[in-house]
Length: 218
Ligand code: DX5
Ligand code: ZN
Image (cartoon, rainbow, N blue to C red; front, side, top):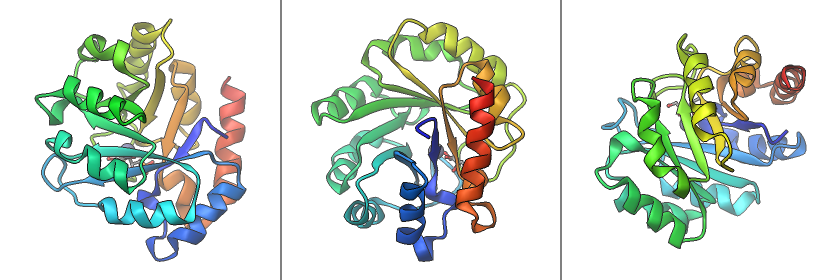
C-alpha cells in the first residue's frame, strides 16, 4: 500500500484523527500534507499547528508538500511540527539548493515539486540532492481537479531523466480509478490521491479499488 499516499486535504477535518486511524488500519504508511499560502497558489489550507496535532495521534510518515513562497523561511517550523519529508516547489524559491541543504541537515527526506508548466529538465541540476521528485499532474491549489492530459508524457520524460537514481517519482493531482493505471505505466512509482481516497467517506473501499488497479498496472 506504500505506492498510494493519501492527501488529507480531502479528509474530514472534523474527524481527522479517526480518518488517519482508518488509513493506518488499511495499511497506509505515509500521508501527504498540502500546505497552501494563498500566494503561491490561490488557496489557503492549514499550517504547522495542524501537523503538530496530527503528529500526536499517528506514527505514519508525514510528507509535507509546501505550496508556499519562500519555503526556506518555514522549513524549521514544519520539521519541528513533525514532518518526516519536506517538498518545496522549484517555482516558489530563488534558493532551491539552500532549501534542500537545510532539509538535509535536519535529517529528513527532501523533495522538489514542479508545476505542469515547468520543464522537466529543470529538475536535473538537483537530482543528486533529492529523495523525491513530486510531479504535479494538476496545477497546485485544489483537490478534485482533472488529471492533465500531458501528464503521461511528462511522467515518461521524468522517468528517463531519473532512471538509475534512487529518487522516488511521485505524482500528485487527479489520481483516481480512471487515471492511476496509465500513470503507473508511464513510470510513476507513487501516487498522491486525495478525493479518490476520501470520496463518500468510504476510505477502505476506495483504497482497495485503487490498490487493485495499481497491482494490475505493474
Ligand atoms: C493539489 C495538491 C494535491 C491534491 C490532490 O494542490 O497538491 O495533493 O490535494 O487531490 P486530488 O487527489 O483530489 O487531486
Ligand atoms: Zn500535494
